[in-house]
Length: 327
Picture: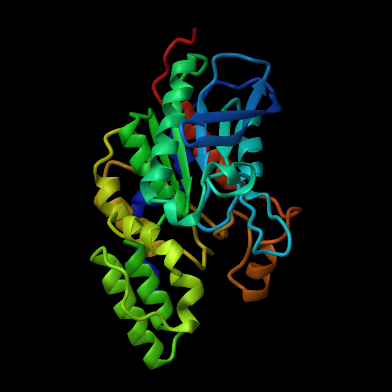
């Protein structure tokens, strides 16, 4: 049984102040880039037309080889979830930047090897994007939107770069090692489950595991262990509690990867945050039932639209953020 959401969790749009009727917008996508001493991070800037002093949102993708559009080379076809989100924001008069993290897509050359990546590499890049957008002086506000693992990256970056607002979509509250232990222990045979616990315990202590069974090599390969050790130091609920800017938690009711209990824990950690529960939205932001085959198909279906209430909730939140004059 899921948590009792109570009165806090009606759709956010019902609680937002009424907005003036917005003009119709179209969008203009163009390439953008974050230059760093260790490589260039490439992204897409989506600008609403006609041009004006619009808010902007930095959109951060989730874990693994997930690119700026929300697609993964591990899946048979794209779903375009984050590209569709950016397009929905632009229609509502909100600019956005979404980017390929180092080692992925257009930013593949921005890291020399997997073994050099640390979680702080990603949070540092995201914070640098926020600072760059603010320095440009063309935006009324700068918000951060993090999806899945990108939620934790976004929390830290939003705080470090003093973003004007923060949105977590399908973001876990518990630490990554806790979730990995829970997910894998339920699926592995007893001997491998015990080995998995020992590996995670070592990585949580900042040490390489003494034994790595071949069956777990793909998950805990030596080249990714430094990244995991750095990642496991952060607990999303703890980081979310540190945020002082307006924040929004967005959670779908048919997400089979990050369940509703995680959103409730985030809300508990930061009671001032708003919450939007999106009926029928799954982990890739599509309107899908909890049925297994439909869930699987949605991850590789670019024709499936986003859950309708998603963009409405986020655009209402961003438009309500304090605005600054543009240069």
